[in-house]
Image (cartoon, rainbow, N blue to C red; front, side):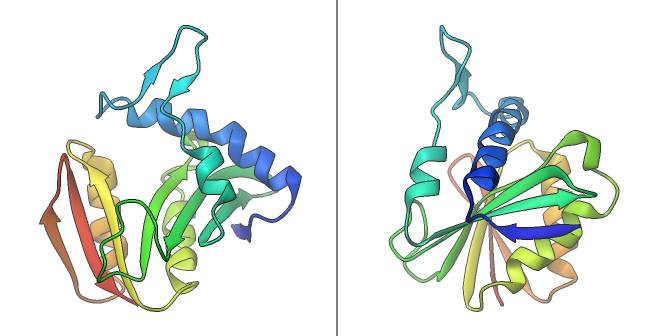
Length: 158
């Protein structure tokens, strides 16, 4: 597994191509994402995330293939609590790469990239993601879970 901080146009394009797969997956648990008349997922936050100065996008690669992505927001970032330094806003591993340890390794690498107080959310009903994050965070130390607005909020320190 290789985790790259997105910096090139090719890396941005890979994330852009993976993003609709992510929204497709999320649509199982949320009515927030929907297809428009042209077959595009709405709302789409990718342009916002990729343009924010205090947002770091990561591309996950496995054996040379684009396998997933992550976005970490710092500073003045949407839905980030004032007492948090970082928000893991998005984390995705494409289906062909799941259940092989790639997601766990990528998650640890992303979290290791920034020290401080973190938050991440998992949409209610997404039991696979809840189990994944509970395993990842339990291996790292103490964390708290709180009910959010349609999600579970995880709070922890790095």
